[in-house]
Length: 302
Ligand code: HEC
Ligand code: HEC
Image (cartoon, rainbow, N blue to C red; front, top):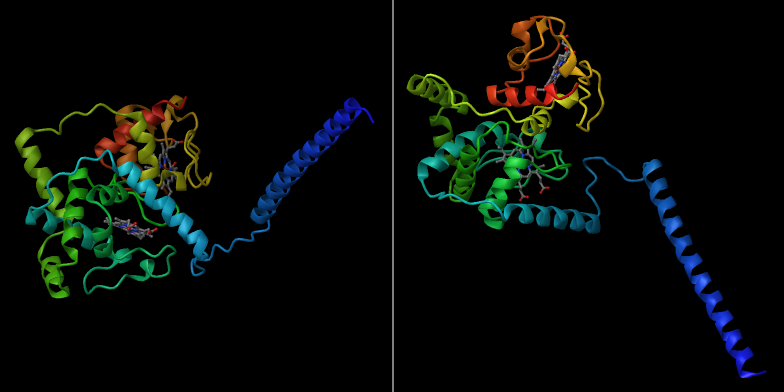
């Protein structure tokens, strides 16, 4: 055998090995993809709220959650949180909106907060583990696939900071002290009505903010409109409890009763049952600003 034929032989063997390796790799990738598809379609993963994830899945998910929140919280400027009046106001918001899931000093979670996976954490513990910016972000934006709602269409940023201020004091409050403040102070609704009356007495009308269609799109997730409507540009259950809103910007009437213009759309979104007492669309406590933003988005759907 000459040197040249030997070299050719080696070259041929090397090529064959490489081709086999490549084929093997493709085979593994295909097998994994088929496995993943079957895993999903055979419903292998148990989604029961009482079957906790396995330890490795739990670790992956909590790490992803921690990293996601801390990345996004980096940009947030934290105001001073030391004013005791702030924490006291925050306690009232907490009592009204959070205690049912998270509990409070001496107060158990209600039914909704018991059988959840992940379990709504004790927020005194959270306050010592997370920075104020991270807590603010989690409250404002909520956390997908956990049951933690976004509160940005319910509370202003200032109100969320008040809740953060309260959470930082929570571990120092005894059950008796918590109850004493919780029983003493009025709800957000009373406080807001008084504030709104005071401010309209001061300035006549609310300050104008230009309608923002992007914010309106987000607001339609925030008010759960997609639970009843198909809305182009929003992902959801595609339920037809209410009419699909594709083309709503070009329609002449709203719900068959109001001429379609911006003011009437705002009126409909804020108080549908005042426009039509028999309508199946409920009043969702939509604010003027949120309704204007949603109307701006709906206007683009021609
Ligand atoms: C419907 C139940 C529910 C309500 C109501 C609720 N939460 Fe949550 N919350 C959760 C769940 C579930 C989690 C996610 C737990 C996890 O994955 O770590 C969570 C997570 C959080 C976190 C992040 C905690 C952490 O350490 O990761 C904060 C902060 C928080 N909630 C604050 C609040 C505040 C403040 C309110 C009231 C304005 C509130 N939550 C109302 C269920 C709820
Ligand atoms: C509980 C279900 C439900 C929710 C939640 C809901 N809607 Fe509706 N919506 C309806 C129903 C039902 C109608 C039809 C009302 C009628 O014709 O009397 C309707 C009608 C409408 C109309 C008029 C449609 C047309 O064809 O004229 C608009 C616009 C609308 N909804 C927008 C919204 C927005 C925006 C939200 C969120 C803020 C929302 N809806 C939340 C059930 C709902």
